[in-house]
Image (cartoon, rainbow, N blue to C red):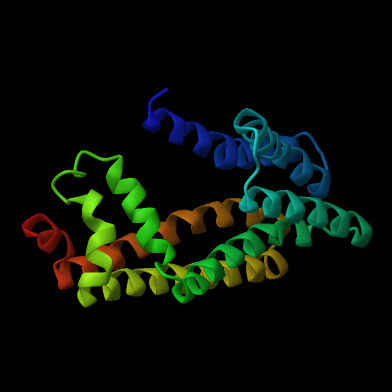
Length: 211
């Protein structure tokens, strides 16, 4: 299976199926809370399947499963689906905080993620990705670029998380799933555009290609 097909499979299981499933269940008269729980089960099953296949489960997967369990429990105790709707905000918020916390370590999260993605792309040789670890201690502009990118992603994800929690408690229940899914696209595109403009401003890719 190619990386592209694998990525589309993840999008299908984690975004399309839960969203479509929710509205199909609602169309059949299922109450909002049971519909939210049922449509989230494919994602939970996928996380467990991936952990069993790899014979390991990462911290983020544990966190996602814990948030799901807590959200279901609290929602059924309160009788309201809104905490369940807000769970995506809690997950996104923790990821955003993780970006900012990574600034305290040797290399921030944006650096590691970008290096991994570029290494798998056709630009790996042109951008000299194998030399990035050596460039880090030698060039201040290189370190500053990835720290700024890390801050950008961290702040954007925290803002996205706040927006999700606000929507979960302020908007009609049935409007939240589709608007929350749309927010994923808006946040991703906005951050990618801002990051591209910043990289272009500092000449990141040009400097790497000319290095």
